[in-house]
Structure formats: structure tokens, C-alpha cells
Amino acid sequence: MSKVQSGLRYSEEHEWLDTDATPAKIGVSQVAADALGDVVYLDLPEAGSEVAAGSTCGEIESTKSVSDLYSPVSGTVVEVNQEAIDNPALVNEDPYGAGWLFTVEVTEEGPLMTAEEYAAKNGGEL
Image (cartoon, rainbow, N blue to C red; front, side, top):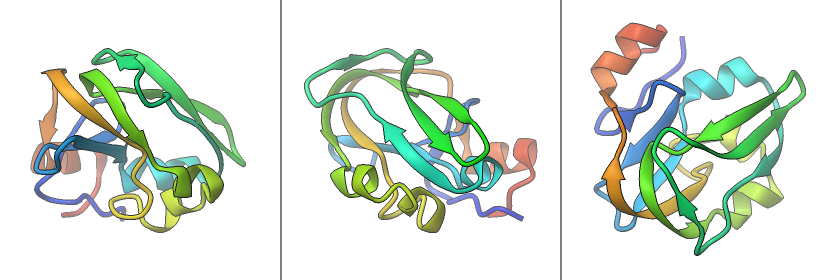
């Protein structure tokens, strides 16, 4: 069973949001990483670009498929995780740590679930 990190909030599309970090940090859940299989390529929004909650902001390509990446918040992208771009396997190996995707200076949040709600809905364990 896939791990769901407590203390984070999650979107319907399986992105996680850490608002304890400044700027807010965003990644994909282990539930999503496990479903995708081996991640081989990341197309992330550029630093300085604007993202909108619930809108597509990039892609994650795995050996199985290509999936859209959705932003759980609106705001300005501050930083992208170059290590994850250079080594996309980090998304599978450590989705809540080294495999984070990008940070955002948040102006508005989209609809988000608690870790408990996300785990219950998606079969993950806390």
C-alpha cells in the first residue's frame, strides 16, 4: 500500500502541497508515483511563470504513460527541482522528499484534502 505523508494536503489529481515550507512546495503523491511506474521525464513550469489552481502546468512521463501535472494552487513559480528533472526516478524513490517538483508563492489555493481524506479515498496508508 502506498504511503500518504501526514501534514500535507492533497489535490484530487494526486499532487501534494506543503504550506509549512516558504514558498509552498509541490510534488506528486506516492499513490500517483506507484500508479505511474518508473518516471523517466518531467516537464515542469518555469520559474517566474504563473500557475492556476486546477490547471495543467506540466507533464510526468513514465514507462507506462504520459500524465498531466496540475497545480493545486495559483501563484508564481519560484523554483523548480533541477535534481528531479535531471533524475526523474527521484519521484518514485522519495516523492515527499528529494522528489518534490516545484515551489510557488501562493495567491490562492484550490480544493484540497487532508492526508486522512486523501488516504481514505485513494487507498493509501498514513
